[in-house]
Length: 255
Image (cartoon, rainbow, N blue to C red; front, side, top):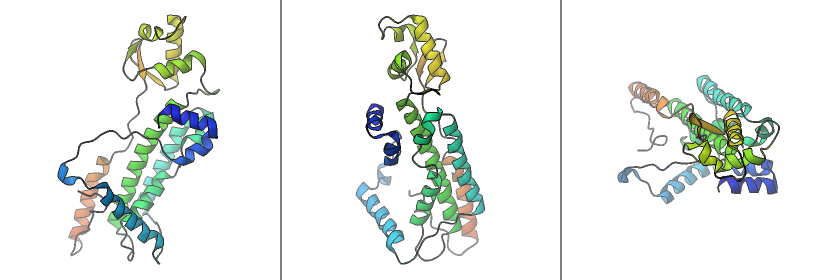
């Protein structure tokens, strides 16, 4: 669903109900080696099997991350709160479907890697937390960008008039003021420039060069999976040196 469809849905049912439907993110295309591709039906079957084992087995899974992992999860929750503070006040309560997304993703990943009997392996559990935090960072960054472009607002409320039309017509590539002015009828150049400067102040547009503007691109997440890969490799090697059999990490990082 595009941003216009999302906005119309919110107008019809209210943003509070629509946000419970989930996250709106953009997944860029990626290339993978043919021999690493797993058929989607096999992946879904595997995940469902593991979820059913956790959900319906006689044992009960309890997510108890280590203190250092709790600190990492709480930091991500604080990062979400800081991002929300940058939004106009009227949008903050309806912007994010789940402020504890990192906790929930980490718990789910840890449960999927649990064997159903023993306590979760500390190395696997820690890596599940790190992966959950990275996924949450990406989802939140993408979602808030699309949410902000859907609900065009400043602190008094939703944008109206020229500001709103300018934000809707602003392309993703740099565009001059004169070119944008041609899209409107009876609007002066100084009015277009004033509207563009307002959008820049609101974080909805970016001035790439003097008097050349574009729609604000998504900001990159503050954390990446590569930030944890070296630490994960070190933990795995340490665990392998300390026991007869190395830790099986294929459930966390397949391939």
